[in-house]
Image: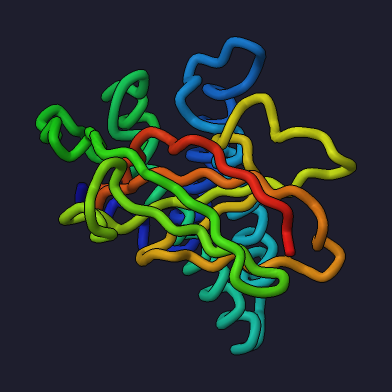
Length: 226
């Protein structure tokens, strides 16, 4: 996909981004959404990115200071770091159609290579305790003899959920875990706060290729935060 699909002009970017958020919200709303392949937390992250952008963009629509300009530029950079992987992961393929992409002012993708869309490898995940307030998430390709990540992959997306008052993890599975990060190498060290010690953390991981597509989640592992 061309990287210049995001408008360069701030006013045009604001209109384009607002349309993207509104369109995605409508398509993912309700008990039986038309787009059911996008986890709710990613929709919420996109919504929050727009709110953050608009908070700093709005003051620059009138006479403003260099400090406000820089804050707006920083907010735009943060927004694009959310937008680009969101588009790569969720808007390239069905149920999103070319008509949807036209409405979103995105390039069409009739000739996307199937091998770029599929992530066949799964993660074998092990949690290790080697210190206070940290858990080491060690991962590799399921069944592999070494810890090398697959060629052309960014790494593994690691997600986790801290149990509150002894309840189990969300019923929706790893897609609904609130904490997530991209781990480019193993082990990934998850750090916790002092008041989280003694609670149970649930962790899962999935490989992500260079096009931003995610594979299947690993088996969920859990441990008590030391």
